[in-house]
Length: 285
Image (cartoon, rainbow, N blue to C red; front, side, top):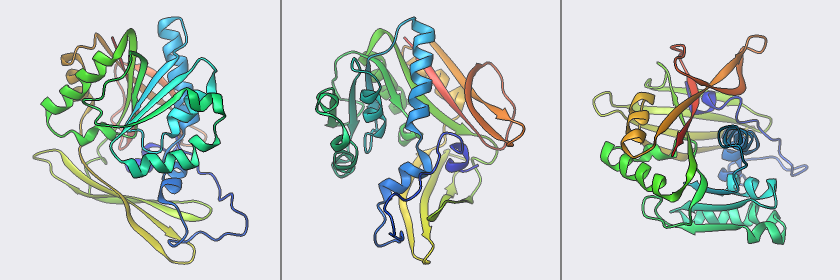
């Protein structure tokens, strides 16, 4: 179960919009390829928006995107409603700058006024109280020690409003700890999720994303992830230890006809022992 396999419904590839341009390793932007292969910010925000309103009886307006990268999610948030404000936080200035050029530049003046991108550590960053904090694409797995992950979760808890919710995601299944590669073909390239190494003693996992183009050129290790493969019980326990009152797992339904996830995530107390699965987690104050 690779990362793309986990995101097969969340992420829908967009075709190359540059007419008559043949993508290759020389001209492809890795961040664009990543967004097209892995992210589906529209459906992600749909889930967050609906779940928050269902639980709180009001719409969320203030969102912070931790490990924001190109701030794709933050930009989608401010586009949704004139009352929405977003803060994106990331340590990589180069990636943030890519987001400014490709996403923020396309926003209206009013939308840009409601967006702030901050180069900072998500553990120590100071922001106004937020209705929602999100940490998606398993980004928080960079914290390998339980104490460090609890410290991050605690900082998120303190940054939320009294009725705030922390949304994050998780993947797992018995394929999650295998050394394996998973290939997904798109119009202009092939995406490879490479689980290169796993240490069952520490739970550490090393993964890469590669891209191969029709002309045979490749972007090897376009992205690499040195993580700990956290389990749902561990994450839930640490969230409670960090001060969250309620932690709910949202599991993806199954489309029998298409034989894939249906993109609908519902709260569950138990689930099937699948080879590969993805879930959302909502941690409530």
